[in-house]
Length: 368
Image 1 (cartoon, rainbow, N blue to C red):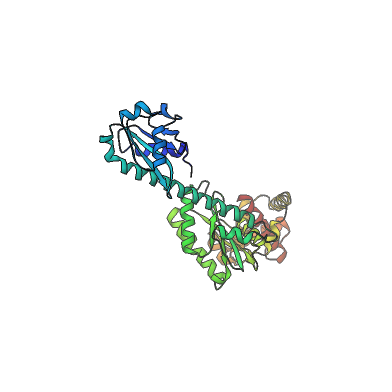
Image 2 (cartoon, rainbow, N blue to C red):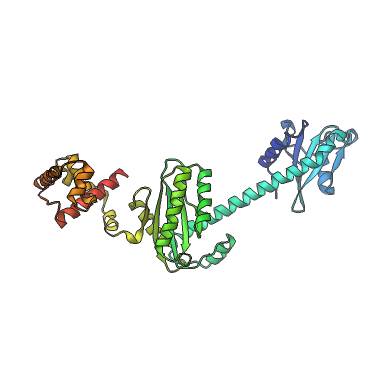
């Protein structure tokens, strides 16, 4: 490992809190890369070179200052990671006075470096997983290096597989909060889960883990309710189709489709979608033309539109519809007759029901 100037500066900022003396960080080439005294950065330090060669503490006196290049009185300590000296931390001052701090400073420096290594490795692993998944969801065939790449990221699954996409319905979701939500998902649902963009998670589950699709839906519902209550977030979920092989492209695409078609804060399963899949393929300009035609027939009467919506939601039950709208049942019948007169469509006929259902579906998509 090579000590960098950024890491050296971080070490300086932390260690200077412990001692009121000048501190330097020196790399393996004995060049000062960070210091509480910026004027020393970039200079060669002969005392550090001696410390690196000997791999032990070096006490530098006034006598050393006269004969060695770039040094001041103080103590130099090797920075050792995995039995390798990667640099030196130097404390300027009277050796007798600064020596009691030397071991603590050395240990703190090595701890900070190990923490940095861990963070780097964690970030590398996260990037490797993300890259793997990005490739995986687009594969039309399994390449020869698939198993090698999956082993490198300690990833193993057995088909049949199913993709699920989870979306946080908020304008902004802080990265820390999203990481916490991912951690909760991994605890609550068995599968492979990763961050998928700034507001989404991707989950790949094995069918053998869940006795039925309904069981998976219940598990997702429990997770959804928990996240909503803890983080005050609306969570929408799209569940894709089964893949009987390691190729999950179709499962992923169907999960995306389910998520885009489904309602906000709902769990939408692709297999449950029938007419919606066909309607979603209709171009936007055709949808808007359809909406405009029907709305024109209704004379843009919003109360008639709302009446129809509630009427269909109550499965054409007049009594329940009137109660929900807080109107007399005769008023409801008058409105339904008015709709028929304006549109030449009987709201109780199969043809009209289909047309109005499509209208409400398109209007709902317009407002999403």
